[in-house]
Image 1 (cartoon, rainbow, N blue to C red):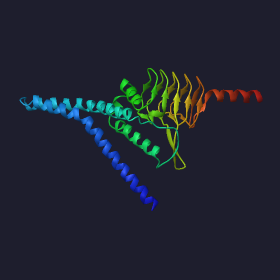
Image 2 (image 1 turned 180 degrees about the horizontal axis):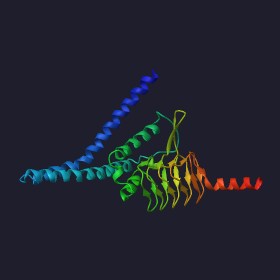
Image 3 (image 1 turned 90 degrees about the vertical axis):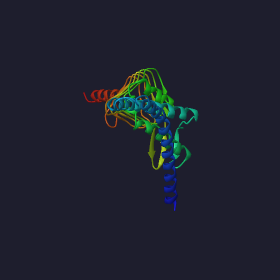
Image 4 (image 1 turned 45 degrees about the vertical axis):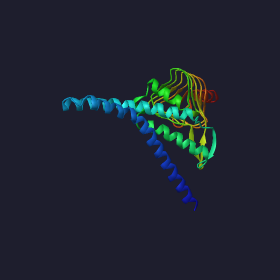
Length: 248
């Protein structure tokens, strides 16, 4: 019977998420439909080809209006209701886990519909700030794979490379683990690198392209980490030097 109750809870939660998506999409579409309706009225006496051309351009503009409205709507909603994640280990059916799933679903509405168009623009920083991230000045996001923003801290002038993944959550032995990721100033996260929960990266460090930084890793200031799983170049050089000293 336990599996049946779990299935029912999952179905209820899924329907709730669909309703919330419909709500946010509906709000984001309102200015688009208003704009289309006004253009339809204004062009009523135009020749058909002009009318179709103007409506096509209006629809294209409307897509960007939809995306920006969706960002502000979800960001304001999260801010007003003060929805933030707390570090810890939680049952997959706890209140905190459900809150994590809900916040994740809010971000995914933007992730799958508009996020590609705001990368490396101030709108990306605005979005992650509105979702609860603590960001310094001039942070550059070239990746949409930034999850659990309310547990993320990034310092000034840090660059998040294309396709880089920052995750502040993972599932271990059937439990949800939430832990902050702290990234210092002037850090470079290489293309398609992966940063797992609990990682702390010091100022001016470099995480090489495709490197996988395992959970709770501490990266020293100005160090370089590379590989899968990632390892410290500084520590490797020290070890190689010690081996050479032992075996001249």
